[in-house]
Image (cartoon, rainbow, N blue to C red; front, top):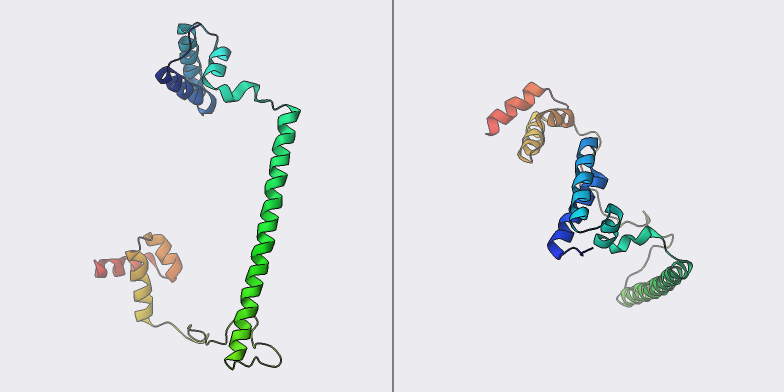
Length: 175
């Protein structure tokens, strides 16, 4: 038995990958035969060659000590994350309270019964009112913009609620 050199190991790993993941049965069988030939050239069985080329596969079993070590590592990581998140939240709350005190010092007076819309500033919407009806120019701009962005003709027709002929007409006009 002679071990694989780096180039042969990489080639064997690719063959085994095709052997395991190919969707066509004939392709899998051809890859298996190629892997068996390559393993035989190095004086190994297919299973021995797979273990030699994929040392991480060593039967795929993890002993109880390794499993416990992984669990302990994960629990330590989770505890660190929890502590970091709690510290971050405390720091954010302190920054918020400090900003609030500073705003009060500068003269900010909160509304007595809370903000008009919780979580949002009292800013007027930039959108048009609900009774707005789009004009033909708006429809033209919408179709032209979607076409310039590379949206398909049929999708533009669906989005703009227009016929495919109308979308094609706009496309011809903007070319």
